[in-house]
View 1: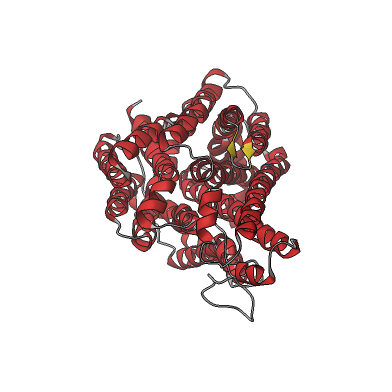
View 2 (view 1 turned 30 degrees about the vertical axis):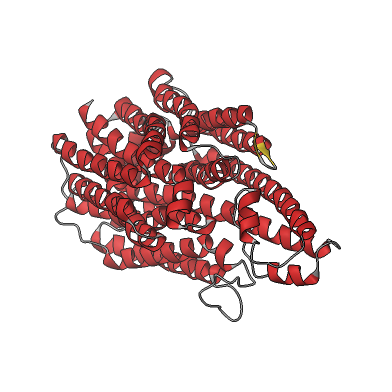
Length: 538
């Protein structure tokens, strides 16, 4: 029990960090002058850095040892939280504090998933992976606790408390038992790390910047243009090209060194790919919540951090119960069916949350119902998402898969924040501009000034502050405020519906989940070994 408790504490810390950032939306706006785009970037930078380097973290754990990388990650997370606590502005908050936490997670979280296949076997491994999924539910108490701390002592003390928490995780890691792990003769794949980190970073930064740089037509926030268009999509495309090159390079690296950043078994095993999709969609869903639900409730509906924290309890209880209960109480449940139910429940949660939105606030009963369904979906998927990957791989690859699983989680979360944030913010801005131009009561002089304004998510009062410098009549101002409220309502609902549709697309990957037990996994591994020997002989 002791090892899994240590790993749960680490997973809870990572989840708690994301929860604290969601609760800090109002404080960041008031204390550091953050805009909605700043908050979106702050949410993005953790999965951005983590997604770019977690595959490398998985390889480092294989070579240097999982316990070493676990401890290094915990210390980096602690350092990042301290920087967040003392940050004088959003630049330091995002580009130093959040980057450090992202680097720390890129070592710590793959180590959590990498240690489990070495510490546990058979049904115990299934339960252990379920426990890690349950940690996301158990950590639901953290946002409520952190919300109380934030209201009582402020945002800075809250992040400092998280720093102390990660120091505690580092200390208790010395209680982990010895494990047999020999990576001393394996070579570090520097070329693969360079391609992976560059490709993932460019892809994610491009996707995440669509709302602030523009999709095709460049916005004022774009730092440069590419042949006259926004750099967002060209950077994302360049990242995909580098990742395609990575796949080709890694084939040769694995043949030469016996180990690679991206083993071919990850790419050629359909069940592994389905499990990676499950990890990505689960965190895409969490990203959708972090950019749509928490900011809307705080910035538009006026909910306090404590009130938003209570929602995490409603989500966390079913997440914990199902992520731990399904593998423990229903060990013979078919993982494919469990994950399919989880996808449907997550999509239903997003649709219920869409119905909870009102032009000036929300319907609390539907907010809580959506939060409960979110827990049902997340708990169901997390109960088996990691184990279906491990079951389909040999032991060393199963252990190393922690890095690619963590990367898929961060890519999924980043896509959720970036894509749905773009639907939300571009939807509000474009709708306000279009409707203002079509409204005869608003003068062309006013609409021309709106053309250069990116509208943030916020209350009607906050929007009035955004347009305070534009000269207009009281009638025009009132008409614009009404247009923005309607645009905010429609764009938020549309983003939720788009998110639900993307989650349901995950159902297309589930037929590949066929290995459901440790015995089947051993048989598949034996056949894979025979094929490998036959290929070597030929």
